[in-house]
Each structure stands twice: as structure tokens, then as C-alpha cells.
Image 1 (tube, rainbow, N blue to C red):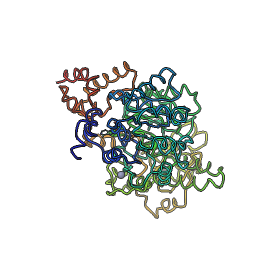
Image 2: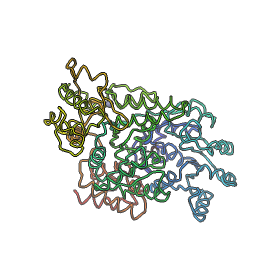
Image 3: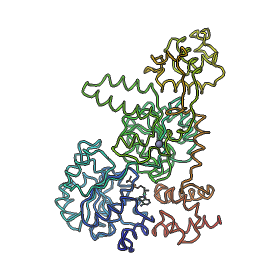
Image 4: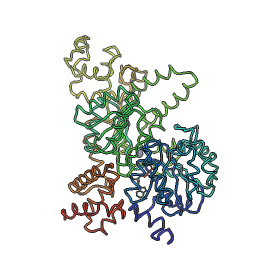
Amino acid sequence: MNAIMNAPNSPLGILKNVFGYDSFRLNQAKIIENILAGRDTLAIMPTGGGKSLCYQVPALIFPGITVVISPLISLMHDQVEQLLDAGVNAVMLNSAIDAETYRVNMAQVIRKQARLLYMAPETMLQPGILDFLSQVQVSCITIDEAHCISEWGHEFRPEYRQLAKLRQRFPDAVCVALTATATPRVRDDIRQSLSFGKSDEFVSSFDRPNLFLEVVLRQKGIYQVLDMAEKHLGESGIVYCASRKQVDRVCEQLCANGVKAVPYHAGMPDDERARNQEKFRMDEVDVIVATIAFGMGINKPDVRYVVHFELPKNIESYYQQIGRAGRDGLDADCLLLFSYADIAKVNFFIEQMATSEQRLARVHLNQLVHYCESALCRRILLMAYFGESVESPHCDTCDNCRRRHQPMVDLTQAAQKFMSCMYRTGERFGASHVADVLRGSQAQKVVDLGHHRVSTFGIGAERSKEEWLFISGLLLQNKLISQNEHGGLFLTAQARPVLTGKQLFECQVSPIMENRRKRTTGMGAAKKGVVHDHTLRNAPVFEKLRNLRTKLARERGVPPYVVFSDKTLVEMANKQPQTDTELLAVSGVGEAKLKQYGTQFLRVLQKNE
Ligand code: ADP
Ligand code: ZN
């Protein structure tokens, strides 16, 4: 970066002094340079990539105001809150603020005190708003979530089509469009609607190396979620379910097991839903259990895990949903609980669809199933889906790559026992019942069905129920058996050679298989061993800093992450700065934050010398 970029009022100077960060991320610097050169810019970055700074830094350099069009009031609110906390004057105009605040905010714009003005697209269409804006100099027009302009996108907003008006009215303002949507068609649409040139497009990699990708067969799913919640005790997580009913059920079970969870779905009253989202944002609860209705308005940077309790709709929405984890760049877990019964269910729904819709729905389902069943690097599979190639054939942060070195295990005898037992009980029961019969259980269901009299009763007592469930998963995954929409297992043509001993059943205890016990001892431990530069080395101090953060956030009525991010607290706990200057050197501490919070955080840190 050249010297001009480095002066106090330069992009880098602002990044450091105002936002407290040391360097720009890959495309940020290029995008900012382009914007400052007065060129219209389309920036495509994954969620968490750092889009906001791309227009916020120039906004502090431009002589006039930066108008930001944002589709959701909650997002706007979040941005303004964070900017104010960093000492930047930003205001918003939308239908949710009262008349008095509206007037005050307008006055701030007219008096040229506000550097950024956030507006909903429908606000921009209000009579008089463009005239009002004409009274001041508009240097930059930023269009956030720009994919809303495209009818091809998932979130088309008719008002976005009117944004051309805003551009025409302020032809001297540079225009910035931001989105996390990678589809080429949507990109073209954005550029055309805003008449951008091709040269001004910046596409960042969609890879998110800090997300650990994992697909596991769902077996007693609630325990799998509880395991995750336990691993991330006191941290934020999202659990996605496919139906409202399931949301309520999972949420109840989590609460019954002591996890602070709230539900979120379209069937709830608006105010209750908003309250639950707010509780999550403010760290008053740890987990939100939600349908896909949840997500767009949430900007929480410290979500440490996302669990898909059921199959997501397609790869694209899956990637968008897991993208809500780890926005702050720290490690986060993404666990998909996979079930063959889910597939049968989705197939059943597809059959009820209009013929014209069936084809696409099948393509989406097959892509997902392929992703779940594959033994290849999940990251590479996902990137390939988005048209991106990855240089190395392996990553270190997906389940398949982690298990690459595991040896083959001969499971022929176990497979024979399990499948014989399925056969003897009529090929219509789920894995749990078959396992009970194998283990010689006296469970009511076993006795009622007379299954304590079949020849395979009790021949598998040497293995635990969990092991049998695990083996059933391996058989499913290798297609020796299959599952109907009620969860009943039946043999496929591939079962015969193994049953008759003509073929071995060997497995690298791999792809979608991991049972509960294995996950907590095996992989969980491995993960902790990986040394990242953000690894927490002083947990007690971190806890104290976190408590102070919560206290200050409550006092000010903002979410804890607005005060400082987890990443900043980890660095503070590790480096233990003792002076203002040392504290300023911590990533995420800018001058405004130092002034506001410095003394109190230093007091905690100094006690811990
Ligand atoms: P997006 O809008 O693309 O989802 P954000 O703008 O919310 O992403 O940024 C995600 C997180 O990364 C935020 O916590 C932000 O403060 C942080 N961040 C952005 N740019 C940088 C940078 N250059 N250095 C350190 N942290 C950054
Ligand atoms: Zn991988």
C-alpha cells in the first residue's frame, strides 16, 4: 500500500484509528481505492467478508454524506449502533423511528454532522426525500444487499428497482453495490440495473476457512445438538429445523436440558419473534432454534455454531445459513444432521409438486445428498458448486479431511448380523428397534411384536446400542440398506453378496458417520489441538473481560459484540495490555472505544499481571 493510503486521514489511518484494525482484508483495499477514485463499484463478498468497511471507510474521507440503502431495519439499526460506538456519526431514516427522532436525524444531515445516512428503500420513495437530500452534498450512494434489485435473487424487493432514480438525481455521487450472492445472473442484473461497467466488479473468494464443516447421521438428534451446545457452553448458536413443529419440539428439549434457547418461526406473533431475536442478539439466550424464516436480519458476529437438524432446502441456502456462523473470523462449527428418512420425506413432497417444479426440486435434493454422502473434502465440493476452484485437494477444517488417515475396518460380521435381523423382523422397523432385538432387549415393543422369538434375538449383545446405530448408518451410506419415509429399513440388492459372505464389508469409518461418543472424545479433542493465532490462552482473564463487556453493554443497552468482539477479547486476554498504547494495539480497539471503555478494561487487565 502506498504512503497516501497510510496518512491519518487515509483509509489505513481511519481503519486503525476509528475501527482499530491493522490491515485491510484482501479485496477491501482494492475496493476502497476504486470507490475513492470515483468509480462505481460492485463488491461481492461472502457473509462476514467485511463489506461494511468498504463504504464506511470512504464515507469518512468524502466531503459529502454517504447514503446507504439497506433493506432491513434491524440491519440498519445494527450498523448505526456499531458506528456510533466507534465514534462515527451515523443516522437512519425509516418507518420504525418516531417523528421526533426522524426530525432530529434529518437535522443532523442538514447540519452536515452525519457522515452516513441509512435509509430503507421505501423511505427513499417518500415524497420530498430526494429534495431533502438535494440540500446537502451526496458523495456516495451505497446499496447494501444489492441482490434485492434482481428478480432472479431470492429476496427481490420491488422498491429496489426504483434506485435508478436516486442515481439520476445525484449523478456526481459514486455508487457502491454490495452483496453476498454469487450467482452470475444476479450479478449481471445488478450491474445492468445500475448501469455499471464490468471492470468495477470485485469478487472475493467464498471460502470461509474458519467454518468447520461436518455432516453426521442424525441419531437421537437432540443429543447431538446438546453435545454441540455443551461444547460451546455460554456461546451463541443457531439450530435450523425444517418445520415449525420441529422448532418447538427441539427448543423445548433444549430448555429441558438446561440450554438457554428460544424459538423463532413465522407462526409466532411478530412481537414475540422480535423479542426472541433481540434476546439472542443481546446474549440473554445462547441458542435460537429457527426455521429458515430466521437469518436475514441478523448480523451477530459471534455465532459459534450452526446446526441443521434437518436437511436444508438446497446447497445455496445451506451455505447462506452456515455463513451466519463465525463472521468475526474465529472458529465456528457447522453441523448438518443427515437422515435418510428426511430424503424419503422430501421425495414424497416432490411427488406432490406440479410437474414443472419437480425437476429443479430433484436436482437440488440430489446435489445436497451428494454433498452429504461424499467422502471428498466438503469445502472443495461447496466451492465447486459456486464455480470456484480450490488449490489444495484437502482442507483441514472438514470432517472428511480430518478422517483421511483412518484405516479400513472389516465390519462384515456385524453387517451380516444387522441385516439378518432386519430380514427376520420383516424389513419395516427403524435402526433403534433392530438394535434392541440384536441386543436381546426386553423392551415392550420387542416383546409385543414377538421379536424376542426370532433367531437373531440377542445375537448382537457384544455391541452397544450406539454401535449398532452407527453400523446401520454405515450400511445406509453404502447403500446396502435403505430407508422409507417412516424410517423403516429394508435391504437393497447390494445386501445379498455381503449376507452370503461373497463380499466383505469394509469401511473407513468415515463420511457421514460419527457417533456421539466418538465425536466428543475423538474429533473434539483434535480440534482443540489446532493452534490458531486466536487460540485463547488465558481463559480466566477472558471470562473476566467478558463479564465486564456484558455489564457495560447492559448499561448502554447495546449487544455485547458492539462493545468489543470476541476476537478482541481473546487478544486482550492473551496479550494482557497494561497501557493505553498497548490497548490501542489490540485489533478492534479504536480511539473512540479506548476513550469509552479503556480505563475499565485496563483495570481488569492490570489486576492480572
Ligand atoms: P459482511 O457485511 O460482509 O457480512 P461485516 O462487514 O459485518 O461483514 O464484517 C464482518 C466482521 O469482520 C466484522 O466484525 C468486522 O468488524 C470485521 N472486519 C471487517 N474488516 C476487517 C479488517 N480489515 N480487519 C479485521 N476485522 C475486520
Ligand atoms: Zn476438507
